[in-house]
Length: 502
Image (cartoon, rainbow, N blue to C red):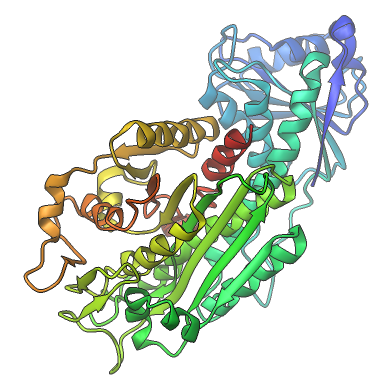
């Protein structure tokens, strides 16, 4: 799918859309029978107004209607999409639904090219509109049938999509377009990795993916194996690997886009490629979805691919500890005590709280880069799903000026993209639940406030730098009929880094 920006001359706007030669032009209509400016521009014979008045299209967000051979219009077809209630500007939600409706309607259209006339969106700029449009269309074309012996029925789809803007918006829109396509490519990689079965997407597979990103985008990849991990004394990480035959990997991927002396942003992604729970075995129902427990690593790799394609002028380092968590005679037991890379000891009360055990050593390793900030991303706790559902990722940071600033940046990036997060507390009182009689800490704090105590556990390993934790257990994938990876939080992370670079 090839996207481009088409400039509409403001001086001739009254006739510009009417003269556009294309297989299909997309314009909006409203619930109160009003037409958008672009629709009115095309409707010299009243055909669009008549369709709206007759109820052929309601104008509600998500509704659509395809018209052919509209008189005095150069386009072969006109696709009407509902924009909701008429106002000076369209609501954010209505625009998103309209973009999704257009993508669905055009999926089977036998047309090579489409022009989309963007309405003005309330409290949003042209960059947001371009990004929302691109992501909606790319989502509609994402396929999950790669491993099927017989592929799903292919849709014809549209090969070329031009987004129409006025001349004053063109430069900004072109920048937004290139960033949006890179973001979509990063999301696709994240979804592909997440959806792969755990017998294919192993720690070695993730390491190979990191090497490919490094080769494609002139990054530096370093892959540490078990002996090198042992030499670093990552006893906490290694404890999770004891029950599996799959070799662990510790992935470091460096994008040196900024100045040499600039402190990097470090992204740490949890890479449990399959989580059985270990000796603390999970229930069998739904355990197949534990292939998604590497969602943090997948989103970090997707983000690195996106910023590599953009050639973002910022130093960014990805760290991914990756392994399986399996039960066996050699597996770590509840009650075992391990020593982390930091020297702190951990009593393992539940082997199914393994994500924090691999992340804590990665967070200690991050110290060597003297980072500007560290953000870890993990499908960490079911408790976060209970607290926030599947709409917001959980955001945890310390409460001081530096961390409040970092939290504000991440929350703002989430709002920019619709990949939202919600800030949760970290307070000393919760650390009481992590006390152990026999080690420096326990790896769980009981069911109460489970996502918070998990974040408090990680926080103990991050006190030498500014840090944030994103718990994406509720947002990284969907279950049921829509089962599959979502590609989140690639939009949030990528936008955060773009804003930092700017």
